[in-house]
Length: 129
Image (tube, rainbow, N blue to C red; front, side):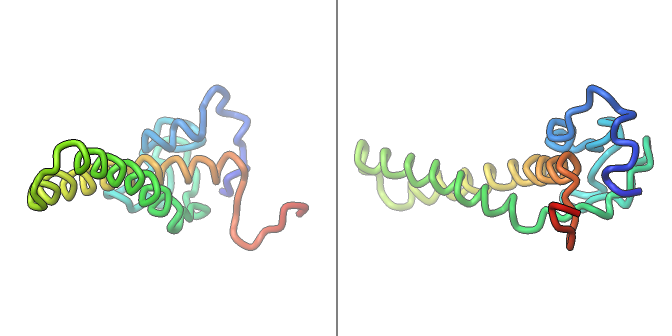
C-alpha cells in the first residue's frame, strides 16, 4: 500500500499527532517503531506499508538547532550570572544535551513520518504528477 491508499477511511486521525506519539499516521493505533528509531515494516492494525518513510537527517538537524540554542543560551546566562568553574558547566550541560537530544529524537522522527504521510511525500515524485 502507498501512503495515499484509503487515507480517507480513517477520519479524525491527525497524522502529525499520531506520528509524534509513535503511532501509525493513518489509523493512529498501530505502532510506528520496532526499536528506538527503527520503523516497522507495516502497521499491525490497518496494514499501512511503512516503505514510504524516510525522515533522513531532518529530525537530527532540528534537534541540533533547538537544543544548541537552548543550552548555549542557558550556559551563557549561568556563566555571566554566577561564574561557576568549568567542571560545573560540564556536569550540568553535557547530561542536559544528551537528555534533550535523545528525548526529542523519536517523537520528532515520528512527526516527520506523519508529515510525509499527510502530504503524500515520496522519493522521486514531482509535485505535479
